[in-house]
Every structure is written in C-alpha cells, then in structure tokens.
Image (cartoon, rainbow, N blue to C red; front, side, top):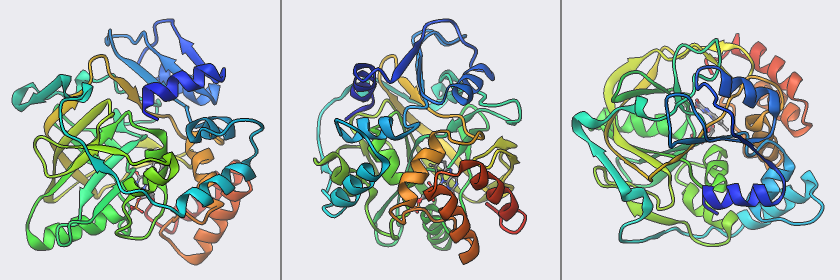
Length: 350
Ligand SMILES: Cc1cc2nc3c(=O)[nH]c(=O)nc-3n(C[C@H](O)[C@H](O)[C@H](O)COP(=O)(O)O)c2cc1C
C-alpha cells in the first residue's frame, strides 16, 4: 500500500486527524506529534504551500494492523502472528519501467535545495532540521552488490548535504567500511514517503545481505515495484513521494544534533557520515513523512515493540543491553525503555 492509499485507509478506519489550521514547521508539528500519539496529516504548513506532512501514522496496534490490511479485533499478539507467518515467504521486488508520478519533478545541480521541503524542526532541543526520521536509506555492498535498506537519522547541513548517524555495527556502516577500503564513494538513495511496511522492514534487524525490499514484499504479499534511480545505480520504490540520490563522502565525518532521540535526551553523533545530494525526484505536492520521537510510546517505540517480539531489534551492544532494552520493548514498558536507554548510553555510543 503506497503512502496515499495508507492515508485513505487510516481515514476510513477513523484513525486519521487532518490538521487544517496553519502550523509552523518550527517546533509546532513536532510538539503536536508528541502530544497527540496518533496519525496527523498537516496540509497547511507555514512557508510551504502545496506540501503536506504525515506523522504518527504507526502509533499503535490499530495503525500497524491497517498497514498490514488486518481487519476485525486487533490484538498485539495477532499482529505478531501475522508478521511471523508473512516473513516466512520473502517476495523479490520487481523493476518496472516508465514514468511515474515520482518523475514529475527531477532536480539536479544548483537547483537542489533540501530546504525546499517542509522539514520540521522537531523539537526545541534539536540543532537542525532532521529530514530523515521515517524513511529508507538504500545502499549496495560495494563488493557483492547486495542491497541494504535501513532507517538512520539524517540532518540537513546545507542546501545539498545532510548527515547520517549510523551505529558502527549497522549494515550501512559495513557498506561504508568496504567503500572506504576500496576508495570508492558509496552511492545512496533516500526515500521519503513510502509504504509503511517498507519502513518497518528497514527498521528490522535482518541478517546482513537479506534484502529488506523482499521482506517488505512478504508483508505486502506482493512484490514491491521498484524504479531505477536516474543518477545512481540503485532502485527505489516507484510509489515514493520523494527520493534523494547522491553519495556518501569518503573519509569525512561530521557532527549531527543535538537531537531529541528515542530515549528522550539530546544526543549528538560526532562521527556521522556526510551525504551529498546529486539529484532529487519528487511527486507534485509531495506528502512528506516524518516523525517526532523522545516521548514514551510514540510510533518509533510502538514499531520497535512489535519487532522486538519477533527478535528483530538489535541495539548493537552488550548482551545485557540487548536483553534489558528488548524486554522493555516487548512488555510495552516505554518509560523504562527510555530510562534504560539513557543509562546504557553512558557506556555505549548509540
Ligand atoms: C525511527 C527510527 C530511527 C532510527 N534511527 C537510527 C539511527 O539514527 N541510527 C541507527 O544506527 N539506527 C537507527 N535506527 C535503528 C535501525 O533502523 C535498525 O537498527 C535497523 O536494523 C538498521 O538496519 P541494518 O540492520 O540493516 O543496519 C532507527 C530505527 C527507527 C525505527
């Protein structure tokens, strides 16, 4: 289900609040997302006529059930069973040709300006505007060509650049290690406004070299349709609202943040990667998808809770850290999850 169909489905299930009043991308959208704990569609954004923003759309079991197309009484256990069953049968994506709404606007060179998108300043704590909060980061292994799709936060640094904060053990970091040893910049595509099931699979800790697109196909029970990027050798969902294409610069690290993170504290990563955008494709009047985190029980916690029940959350730390954080998530004890996350940050980088 593409993002627009998902919005209609949420509407049909009375799970969507349309915010008609003019809202400020600076703090207000983030604050409302944190306070509301539900799907909000903003379509009157200060300084950005014609754009809309969707937040909070996976904020609980009813929303996740809607994305999975489950009807009737929704229990968390039913969602776990459905996910487990569907994940057994990965469905390879297919490449489709032709022009899609995504190709309505293709921007390159000096016309690239990330500030043209209504990226919220999600909290008063944040040191900048985070364009990547609920999206896909797509890269390929420079040696084997196998694909990785993850979710790693991204902050706009200039019209054409953004940081990417990755845990050193993440699969994107592994791709980057290989690229740096081969001295070959790593191409990346960032897809904003895609199927929620694709984001779910990108956030899941599948083993290295598992194609998250095929896992998203398993959840959707049909293959994801991909189109080839125009400026990089990568494929992205044909129904994406916005795609940023570019490369991660070799041997360059930048500081991101501060950012109000999942644990409810300001964090900053001094060793973030630097992404340079070379080409942008986007639909007319794109729906920007993002989220605010930092309060207990927001959609990042709800999504991770569902994944933790399937053993698909990896905090890349000691066994103790894994055990405690996963137990909090599984039990839906999000306050304790945040407290444990803060405590474990004293000993770990992420
Ligand atoms: C909303 C959200 C934001 C996330 N942000 C980050 C991040 O900034 N850096 C990171 O390393 N992992 C982040 N994660 C966790 C990764 O998406 C997760 O570890 C995933 O398994 C990464 O893919 P990989 O296993 O292919 O590396 C985030 C997850 C979610 C749901």
